[in-house]
Image (tube, rainbow, N blue to C red):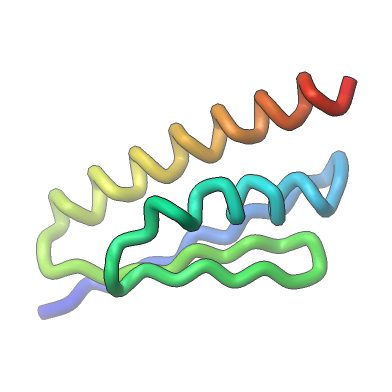
Length: 77
């Protein structure tokens, strides 16, 4: 059984932040992962066979997205 999930990022401060964060995370995408960016939304989709892998992957993605967003906010100041 495959478990599929999608994470959508939207930045209320600046639509480009979500796009930049998604593009900064994309190089780490594994096979079966995809990143789409459109109109200030960034969507990362992936699937896995194990719930534990899903949780670990989501945790890594969200932590890295938070760090990327913080860096972008400091650079823009």
